[in-house]
Length: 113
Image 1 (spheres, rainbow, N blue to C red):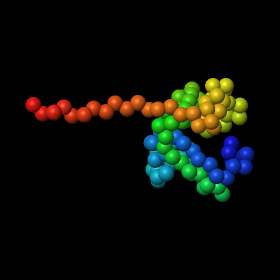
Image 2: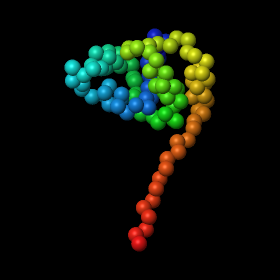
Image 3: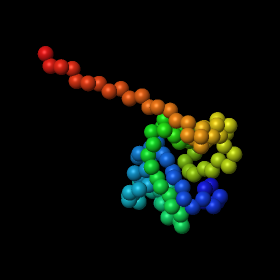
Image 4: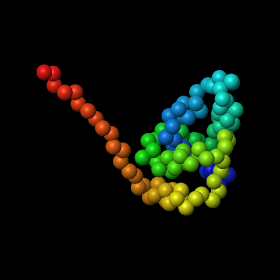
């Protein structure tokens, strides 16, 4: 979609480190996603600048929403030309810079007796 709209410098964020690793490294030709990964790499190799980066789901609720809702679609690549209202709201929040914190539980070692 970005390519079709003339964007030539984009940032792609994913909350899946595994997906980013698969796109960025060589894949065995018999890997179950080899065909899809090859198509993604060809697409990324076009005349544009694409930065792929990892984000936690709290850092990009759009990526989180897409990740969760992708499970209802059959294997393949999809373009949402008319995103659902909930996704549009999240995109608008992202444009405005609205973020949410990530809670991390940190434990400290107890003193030795």
